[in-house]
Amino acid sequence: MLPLKTWATLALLPLALAQLDKPIMSPAVPFDQMDTNLYDNLKSTPASYSAWDYGYLPARCHDVAESWENLSPYDMEVYNVTYEDCDRPWVMCRHKEADLSLDQMIDNFGRLPVRMRNLVRTQLAFPGRGNGTLLAYTFTDLGDIVYTGDLYPYIRFWIHEVGHIRDAQVNASAGDYSSSTAWLNEYNKDAYICDAYAQTNHAENFAQEVVVAAYDKVVPGGIASLVPNYEDIYNQFSTVEGLMGDELCPGGTCERLFEDDRLVCVGPEAGCASKREYLAAREARLAEREAEAEAVVCSFEH
Image 1 (tube, one colour):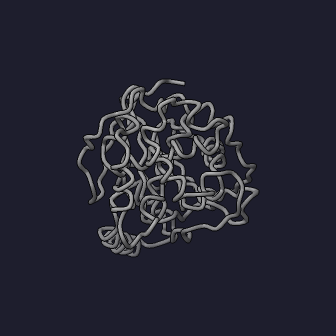
Image 2: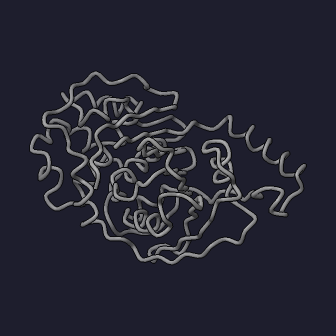
Image 3: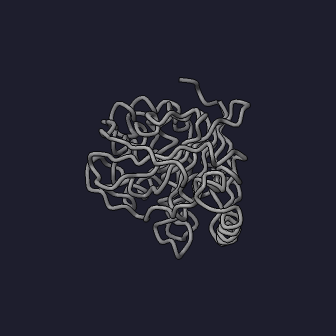
């Protein structure tokens, strides 16, 4: 596994974007040492899958391919993935040249506890953008997560991205929990922050604490076995543990938060819509997108 030397993030949400000035605990939380223990203790859930017939895509899959990744929607593959702990399949969209294979997407997602998976609507995988950058971004309003590059070895990133969805959905009408008085009160009780990445802003700090909380709940010995000075951030990660509760733990039932995305025609060449119908539907859809929350974008260099 390649070490991650630098974490840099760009958060595009209209909330606490300023970098946090709280000092980093010493030693900092060694997030790069978490993956092995998380993989060992989060067993993959058996699953089956079936490919969609060609012609239609989930709307987010189409629009991200075209508008965010500058790739052809015609090159997207779509699958229904059904895990044995849920009778309703999750939809996964994958560009045909994505670094993440379908099997890797299924495996990593299936390692997340089902109550955590409940927060996710659709997952998308695209080729890396070059320069050794691993990029993930999350549309927190509807639970869609996008991965570019080979993010398979890093299960903590998958947990981190789900953390952004939980942050936005504690009380969706009130804005992100990480910008609330309740969170800031707990944040201010601690003298330190977990690492340099968490200093980016409150949203990224919250998502990092979701990773800490998951590790604490899942790995024998908890975070104390990895970080002797864990009390430096105790109020932050214990607040996440109280907020998410059993979502952090294996077991439970499938109670999905979001309905599946609507279907759209891949494009007029697929034969499912005329060019005029396709363009009109796309323009209407993109106009609707302007009212939606921007994605939280995380760029990981290694």
